[in-house]
Length: 326
Image (cartoon, rainbow, N blue to C red):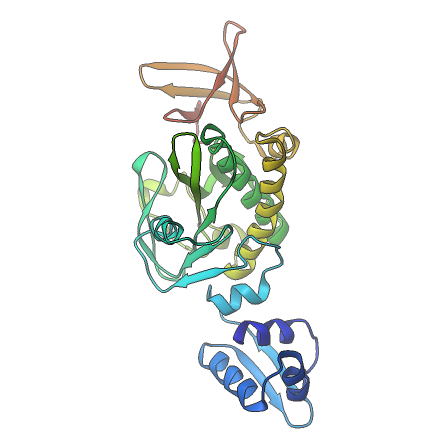
């Protein structure tokens, strides 16, 4: 009920009468009043005027189920939201609910994360209310070896959403870091459960530095946040819903070909490595070259100093700029 009330109030510049709300949802005025009261207790400022109705004035920065569901404009991505006060890792929680049968597109979000996971086992902790930590459950009918490309589709979705919502020139440092002004703003981790050649589910976790205002000294040269770049706080729910809308479109394009064919053009526009010298760090094999973009399998094409081109698969490989993080 709360999400429906919020959606109705958001869709109107002026007042929405209690009678209209009752008619929309087929409930009593008492039920509407109860929903309004609960929203006020959660930090929403809602003006109530006799003979006019209700008007939404101020929304808190929350990632509650009601807030997200009232903003979501997708067909399936994020239509079912599980919002947590705190969790060790949204990926872990999403995998647990996936094992229990959670539907395709189920989105897990949290206000606080204290045991998040990054690429190659790195940790990521998110203090309460400062950032976006979310994981989406997917049940794609694809070969397991193609699942890693979903990470690239998610990265592109985050970058395009940031551009649309904030105007910042977000880009992608191949394969799974979203960057703004040469600093990391989002990391993405994809995990899957499979049996032989069949995928049970895929979980994609996205961690976006939203309203962090200070980083530890060792991260200051490589990490940033939307608030630091914008000079003002960012509404997390607005960003989450924008990402889901972009990701839904990217996912459907990927599923159509089961590779990056339909996403390559958009992805290349975001790729900050392209045309730059990079250092490829493979176990036991390091070399320098120039990034030329990606192929249809999402591999980074690196032209070596002798002119040969190597297709680099993400896996356990890292790619760094010669002099900087990007």
